[in-house]
Length: 276
Ligand code: NAP
Image (cartoon, rainbow, N blue to C red; front, top):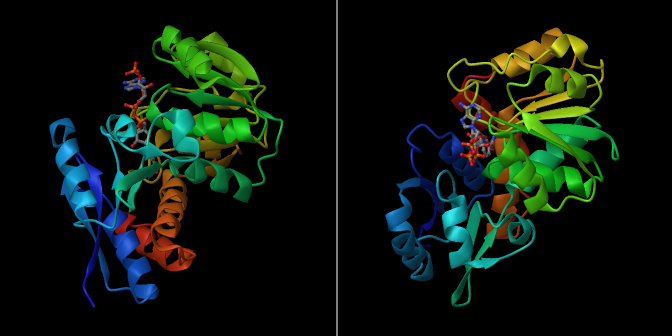
C-alpha cells in the first residue's frame, strides 16, 4: 500500500510537535501514513496548492503566517467561511477545501472545564487565532470583550466578526479597563504571542472571580506567566497544548473520516512538550 502523506505548512515550523502527535495517531489507526514538515512562505502558497491537487499531500495543516493567505485560494467550509482563515486543507475531487479546526481547538477545552454558555469573556489579541476564539465563544452565546495593543484593532475585530453579543474593547496596556473586565468575566483567552519568551501582560489576577477560566493559546512554554498568574489566583487554567490537541484531532477526522485516537495523540504531544 502506498504511503499517504500529510504535512504542516508554514514558517517557522521546525520545532512543531504536530508530526509526533499525528504520526502517533496514524500508528494507532494502523495507517500507512506520515505527517511531515513542509516549510513555506507566502510565495510558496501556489506551489503547495499544486502539490495537494497532484496528490503529493492527502491533507495539510496551515500555520502562521499562511492561514489567511490560503483562505481565498480554496473552497471554505464551516467556520473557515466566517473567519476567512484556514488551518486544514484537503482535496475533494478537483477542488481543494479548507476548514478552521482552531475553533474546535477552543471549544472543546472550554467544554471540558464546564465553561457555561451565556457568560462573558475577554479575548486578548485581535489576530487570526482570536478569530477562532470569537467564533467558539459566539457559538456559546457569550458576551465578548476584546483587548488589543492597538484598541482600534480590537474595535475593528469585534465589528468584523459580527458577534451576537459584542462587549467592550480597549487597550492591552489600559490597567483600569483590564481590572474591571477581569473582575467580571467568566473567561479570558490569551491569543497574542506574549508569553512565548516569558513576557507577561501583568494582568490583575487578584481581581478575578474564583471560577474564572484562563485559557492561553501558547503551548511552548507549557506554563506561561499568564497561566501561572491565573493558577496562583485560584482560576481554572487551560494550557495551549489542549487547543493544539483538539484542533489536530478535528483535522485528522476531516482527512480520514475516522474518530481520532485522542489518547495516543495526547501522550505523544505531552512527551514532545516534556509534560509529565
Ligand atoms: P497573529 O494573527 O499574528 O495575531 C497576533 C495578535 O497578537 C495580534 O492581535 C497582534 O497585534 C498581537 N500582538 C503581537 N505582538 C504583540 C505584543 N508584543 N504585544 C501585544 N500584542 C501583540 O497570530 P495568531 O495566529 O493569532 O497567533 C497568536 C498566538 O496564538 C501565537 O502565539 C500562536 O502560536 C498561538 N496559537 C496557538 C494555537 C494552538 O493550537 N495552541 C493555534 C493558533 C495560534 P497587532 O495586530 O497589533 O500586531
